[in-house]
Structure formats: C-alpha cells, structure tokens
Amino acid sequence: MTDHVHAYGPTGSGTVLLNLGGDTGALIIYTGRQLLGREIEISPLGEDGRPRTHAAVRERPVQDGTFHSAVYPDLPAGSYTIWWDEKRPAGTVAVTGGGVAEFVWPTSDSPPTD
Image (cartoon, rainbow, N blue to C red; front, side, top):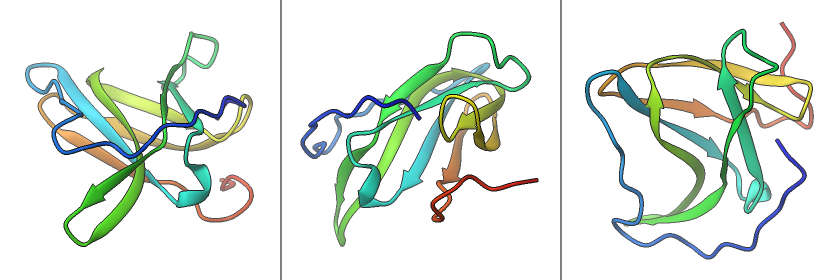
C-alpha cells in the first residue's frame, strides 16, 4: 500500500466497468472504511521488482448501505501479490480470464505471516 491518500467521493452506479473475457479478468479487494482513499498495490506473483498496479479504495453504495473496495477492472489472468506496504505482502490471489477474483483485506494492524 502506498502512502498516497486521495479524497475520492463515493462511486455511483455503473461507474466501474470490468473488462472480462479471454485471458482478462478483474480483482476486487474489500477493505474497511479506514482505508478509504488509500492506494493498494498489486504485482504479478514472483515479480516483486516489476512496476506495480495500484487502485484507490473507494466507497461503493449498494442497496443495503455501503462497502469499501479497490477495483482492478482488467488484469491478465494469473496469480498476483497484494501488497500491505512497499515491502510486505498482504496475500495472494489468482485471477482467471473472464472471472472476478475477490480478496478481503486483513483486519489486523499488521500483514499476515506465513
């Protein structure tokens, strides 16, 4: 997770379009409100030195209230490291072509250990 914090408002209905199909999938990382505006970085598994992709945590209204998440709408199929900070991973996830992978951000104050 980078130190960048942005002041985004809630997203509206239909503001995130997922590009699914073939070898392209998507990822949603569910977080708590405390990460609102923070950017969460991901990178292909095993390629820690490669440039990372990031997305900001946004508030997302739904019929029964709101939830907070970062959305990566068009990722090549494969396994990804989700970064807690610049050096420590929060976990990994597999993205499949045509599918939407989901990851729940750890609720503790430190990343999980293996």
